[in-house]
Length: 252
Ligand SMILES: [Fe+2]
Ligand SMILES: [Fe+2]
Image (cartoon, rainbow, N blue to C red; front, side):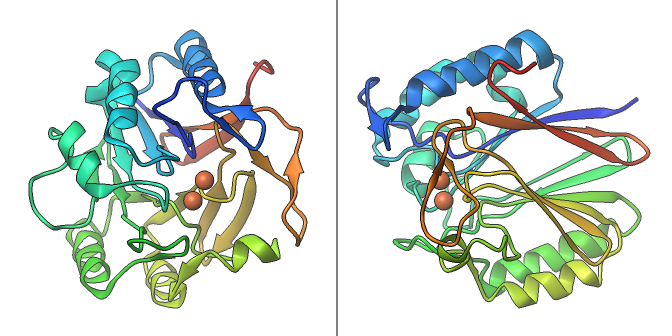
């Protein structure tokens, strides 16, 4: 038995279906990604959306997202990015988020694996942060299941991806999280979005992955640039270890 996860990130949707971000009609590429997932990976166990879902952060945009996710929703988990509104997420996805002031986190346990979602949104800012309360919660989660192989998901990558302008809007105070990951050998991988490009790094024994956006792709240059690669998503296959691959539109 194994677990198959689809990670989709940085959809940057608008309530206007024709809405454009940096020349890309974001609904068009997002729905093309969903179609490709449906065609090739519809047997996924979980679809994890790692934030920046609504560029305009409008309630209606989240309602439209819910509509297109349809009956996949029960296999979906959602994390906020800097372009998201927590109150709207709670309102539109009440089955995923309780009515309280807690960060929008999740945990899943299956087949000896534990999957933890972290909320790295720092309200009103592009940069992210995992605050002390959430760090405490994460410590408890890791202590609770020290023998489960573990994956972490969050919007902002906790390491520099060596692209200056994006590293400047990364995760504040990442050192605490990095130290916890280093001290937690059960963490096999950390999966993030935010940087709109594929990157692989390491923290101790854990792999760090970032995943292409479903819309605009950024270039791997120190100043802001765009890349002509097509929209993408990530598949993770968990059994005795974690295997993963990025797929892009029309290359399957
Ligand atoms: Fe983004
Ligand atoms: Fe972001």
